[in-house]
Amino acid sequence: MSKKDYKIAVMGGDGTGPEVVAEGLKVLDAASKKFGFNYKTTMLDYGGERYMKTGKTVTDEEIEGLKKYDAIFLGAIGHPDVKPGILEQGILLKTRFGLDQYINLRPVKLYDSRFTPLKDKKPQDIDFVVVRENSEGIYTGKGEFRDKGSKDEVAIQISYNTRKGVERCIRYAFEFTRKRNKRKKLTLCGKTNVLTYAWDLWQRVFDEVKKEYPDVQTDYAHVDATTMWFVKNPEWFDVIVTDNIFGDIITDLGAMIQGGMGIAAGGNINPEGVSMFEPIGGSAPKYTGKHVINPLAAICAAGMLLDNIGEPEAAKAIENSVIKVSTTKLQSLAAGKMGFSTEQVGDLVVENL
Ligand code: IPM
Ligand code: MN
Image 1 (tube, rainbow, N blue to C red):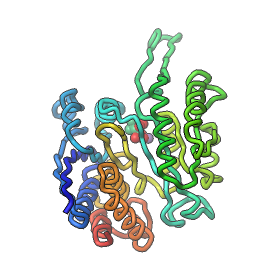
Image 2 (image 1 turned 90 degrees about the vertical axis):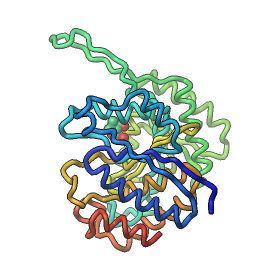
Image 3 (image 1 turned 45 degrees about the vertical axis):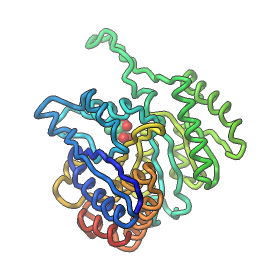
Image 4 (image 1 turned 180 degrees about the horizontal axis):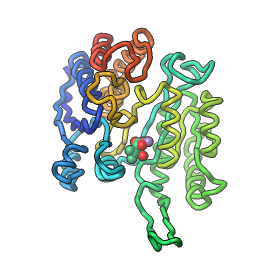
């Protein structure tokens, strides 16, 4: 038996979030028995329902409270009856920023050729990781309106990039590429030809830090070209490092080429603190309570969580089970088309663990 005892905060959130999280927890439970670790979960009701009842998103005290956990497992944030932006900023972004989860790690991996819309691409062609900066850029909410509502209105949204913020992200990406030890190639994805302040800094820091990693091969691609290569030659990528908004955009495309939101997971990482793992898709309100949503993304997020807290063997076993179940059992990764219910897919992953 492992002496390990973990504390995990669980935020099911909105829509189908709680349903997929329940399957993730089912797999976590089975993994803990098989790999001999203990954990205790605390269920938190942060989300749209609580906001409508109490007006609270996540308070500063609650952010403080999250710091005592080993990790956070999140379902989805976003409620059809709450104006867009309130929950996203007040819960998701506030937690990312409040816990200084400055990396958003999003693996893009195809498990079966059937799942990609790209013709002739195989699992070996689609296997890369996006390291998205998660604490700066245009997500900091800096900006202003000038003459709001008038014909001369100007809306300014600032991309805020600090030397320290860019450097810690790039350094993480180099370390990650080295540790992943696949092709040992790191691509900087930016827009140096237009965003000549922000990307000048990113490029300079990248060029400086790369000198410390002679074993890592480096490359640069503009973000627009990156989307083209994702479709045409995804096999060129190993690890990509990029800023917050570009990372947001390219990882939705990444999710599609790996089989859709049903399988795409990510981690909001603070390498020195508490990290949060989530399926990267939204709350999918139209599927709520229908037992058709694919829980594999949440299950993969639970696997990433275990890897992060120090249970890499269990994490690997979960991934292997997901690969087995998705390639040999599921008809499709899409909601309602899997050939199984949400709960049955969770059970299959447990059986194949
Ligand atoms: C994501 C989401 C969030 C983001 C939204 C919900 C604020 O799209 O996790 O990618 O833009 O980061
Ligand atoms: Mn997104």
